[in-house]
Image (cartoon, rainbow, N blue to C red; front, side, top):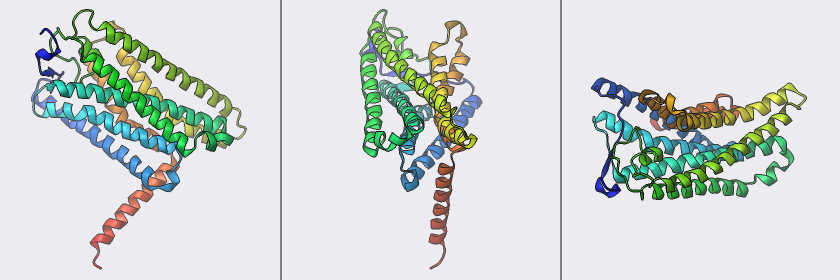
Length: 317
């Protein structure tokens, strides 16, 4: 194959060759996908409907849930479809779209997590200036900047990657399309242009990581000085869910892309890909709602209102 226009589809990695294991993969992914849809959908609905949650923290959580819904929807349905119908193909346009969506949504999520770290820093370290620094207009601008940065990053990388000639076949060694796997199919030395762009993005990502770390260093410095145990507990409750989500996002991504070649194996790479691409969107809502009384109350109120409306419609007038 001389270049990327010589074929019109890619072959994705399958989880198993036997029909029983393929159906098991379909069932597991369906369960995770439905859990992600339900949990993120509940958070989106609760934040949108409950005026008590119309604060900067929950506004950013609303955006995070939208991103989690999008990211798992860009990956899981195609993989489930392939397992259900015993196929492994994805069209050239579908692969390009998947690369764009995955990169767009994950890049935006990383930017949004950085903004959320700033939100926690201002809330704890500069509480008197919270309303000024994080007003509604400022929050919208920061969220728009995160979405815009992710979009530009995805457009740049996707256009650059799919303009590179591919000479090494069309077999993608993952269950979804991503840039490192596409670059493995490129002609010799033709991938160096995209590698340069990746290095620039990695430097920007490292800058966001340093910002998050420094924010939490200052947050914990202030929290440990709070004299009351109740005050420290409340401050930690505000920060730990975000810190847990950031740790899960960064650690799984770093392990997936920076692990030494000696640790690579098809089975391990497959498990790692599932852990960093499919599991977090389903787990993040649980992390945020586990110790969040306001969110639990809003979900309880939403459930009661839904049940009440359903019963009132069924009862005879």
